Length: 127
Ligand code: FES
Image 1: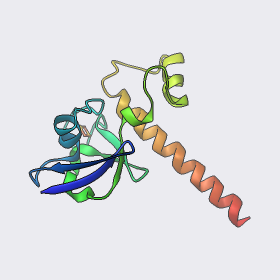
Image 2: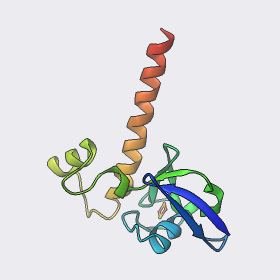
Image 3: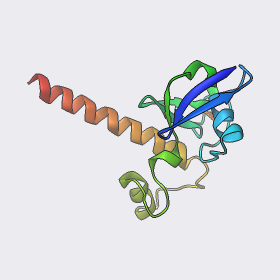
């Protein structure tokens, strides 16, 4: 099944089995291994990515359900030498535990903070 996604700002056309999860599409078809598979049941959050700015568990959703969507993974948030402020804070403040789920934590927190910024901007606009 043809699925068109914009991954970290780059358009990608994938030919996938319709049962392919978004997480497996990212990891196995696109080589973006920053998003981790932990529980594969929507419980741990290691696979969290942003779809159209909202955080989701990539293990619980099929890639074909996101045809036309914009997906941001940890690779799209920042990279060594060009970390996002949140990634930089994780490094400076030793925010890692074992590090396995840290990409999911950062994607989740980035989406949360972005949502907060939008709410604040909306409140200012209506006041
Ligand atoms: S792998 Fe645990 S929530 Fe997706």
